Length: 398
Image (cartoon, rainbow, N blue to C red; front, top):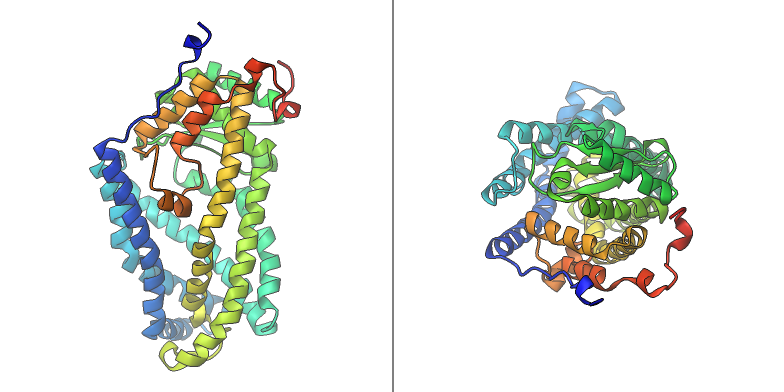
């Protein structure tokens, strides 16, 4: 009788539609990755970057303005060259598989906003890079790496309140009773001053999503309206328990450490490799010093390659954190069935494969496979055996 009460939730088989979507997205991911290297390489080796620098100099001789104008021209050219891939990946394919509600006008507006935000962030970064290159050619990478720490922290701090609302409308949950239960769960997890936001993602997508962002006074747990509509109360509470784990277990701060470490490595690799490439190809590049702003495509390529090479290790680290967040969510809700059902819904609505290709999963995914998560939820029930919970010390009350 006891066994019948805990029938395992079955791992869903992949539909033909999900398989087609999975390989289409992975193909486009690979194309986008190669395109993201090929486009700056084209701008670099054709000498276009140097001509963009010269064009910007004719408008203004002030260095900071000169750099901004160069970056604006460079960003516009590369965005146009990358537009076909981005449009097909983000708009056409999502509509082809009936996963998107987004109008072309909304997609174009969001893309334009992303371009502006990206340009501003890149400008701040490059102001530091090229100033330090001019003043300290041998240690610029170290100083810029140190300077990137407060920049990354600031981005984590302001993104929830200034950047994310540029793309979607955030507000309090419409279901006040459910919100009260989520806040009670947050209190039990020891999260003070927690805030839950409902984001209107249904105007863009049918996919389900929830996440945490920010810290200190900007920390928030966000649920998409699509997730609230698709899941029942118990399933939502498990998802919230999982997201709360990222706060409680310090995953936001560890994420900052990982990003800053990668920036350090990428800057150092650029310092070691860029000069050799400039010496060999200076005639084609149109510059002979790394501190020349026309070297930005070269810096971009080298830093991107470091991030790509690090992907399997970084994803492995984050998958471990996501697994522990699943454990935390299970322990605080003690509802394995609801957790497994939530994963099944994520699988079916998002057209995810429960058992994806192992190689692609290793290099692309920051979460365990859905099959692993469902099977873990089915079997992890230490509270029923009277065993001590791993994260018991984080819970207060009942």
